[in-house]
Image (cartoon, rainbow, N blue to C red; front, side):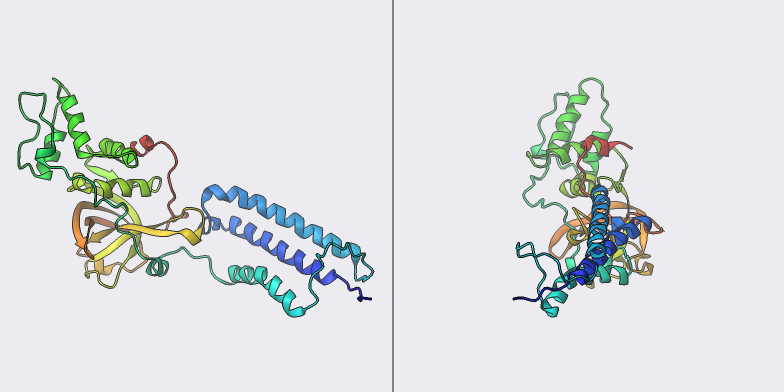
Length: 331
């Protein structure tokens, strides 16, 4: 007959592990650092999970007190009894205990350049290789007696011509037609094109935390239309080894669900004072949008006009935007 054994150690170990997980989540909430690991929309569910873990820990503690050190526990015959091997038990409990110990032992840090170096910086937010280019020949004839755009018009002159059109005498329709040509779109990019049309007349484009990825995508898709515009943006400094001494990337980590899927996005910046900025320094800056070639790709480059060093925000990450794009065009 197989010798019966006490399950008290297992009850206590399980209660301790579950209780510590619950305590660790509470610790992160109190320290206001839970957003370092998961997106804000998941935080309420994690808090509920902490409550469930606490109740489970209490349940196992109750079993430990009820059973005590008795080995006369009835076998339910369901095959759920823990293995007798100390090694196997240690391996199973270690799968839960080791991540918990690492979480407690390691500091809660914002992801920065070290993570970017592993994952790689994304400077092309959108693939625009197939986007139709806008030329004078592609612009439809104007309904006005005077053409809205003349042949051989440069992008800067095109911008000025569209922005200076009066909404009177039918020119409003001409501007709408022109904007449709400046922002060609398919079913996948129509929202970005409409957003671009709304922001096109502004001298300064403010890339806010809310809608960060969407604004970067729009600017990348239609970057030729925004050449010469001032871009206001915040992020941390990152450098690749092959960048010039006066170049760096103003970047943010974008999180879909948790820190494991976080990816870095940003714009290349050129600044005479760029070399004085250390990596992972948080800045807010205004720069004039231009384009440059980097590693064989045409990308956006911001020519810095003003850079201010700031403290890292309490929530340093950016997240996908699921609301109406029209709200992103509001000041």
